[in-house]
Length: 367
Image 1 (tube, rainbow, N blue to C red):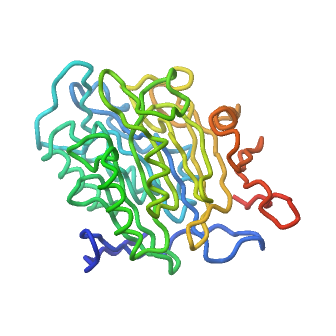
Image 2 (image 1 turned 45 degrees about the vertical axis):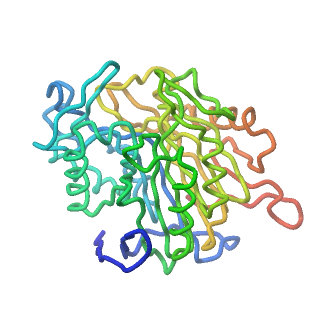
């Protein structure tokens, strides 16, 4: 994919990327001006800090995506959360209790572009593992391979153009050094400014407590290890009220429920996806997915699909024939959002209830 970058005179120093995305054949029920988003959760390809023993065999990362690459490249826009840095020689590792610092070798970066990724959120608790110098080198490395990373306050958003549709993207975290989603005024200003020049706004956030004990979405601020991890439910609704069309969450390292709010889709946590060597992958932590979301040119949710994935220890994503992600998200959604206007089928299709005038649900898109 050839990607052309150009600086644009638009609000909050946004950037415009123009490229022709990969499109899937849609059925007659869908207009031609739709966008297919492929989204996954946390990615960390192995770290050479504190030891190269945490890298994949022979220092090669290409095989990690072998079984899932064909699904990732199907998106018009493919997104993930980069849970680590390409710091290279820059910066010093952070220190402290309960502290992990991840530094992927710079030579690993092409594995991400070859897997089909277009955007990464860097608004997370590992973005500054090697300080601001490591963060900025991560941005440089990603830009060199045609991938955009977001998260800093001075670069909170990006605009791209796909199939004649302007798509804005912004990323938030609970880290005050980044774009802090606990600051409601900041959130509203960024999203409103972004929506002024776009057709669709996609928002990423990193928040919530971590681990299998925290699979449900609460209606209050979450704390983990004494740290304020934000109120993700309030944030997601605030983002949509301000103009967001799709909200993608990560941070808990497990899957969470999905919700439809004002005909806009929210995924509260996409879990771990490809986290090699240093992550707990037991039970719920090892269940993952590739989430397809099809949006209209106005950003309304049309249909979704869950491609179930699991991580084979020490962190290799595989297609899951047991479909655990489908059953987990369906059960969590039924419990956390029993009134949401979504139905998750056994095959992973995510449908809107009573979409058609005759009361029937929209038929599945051919993924």
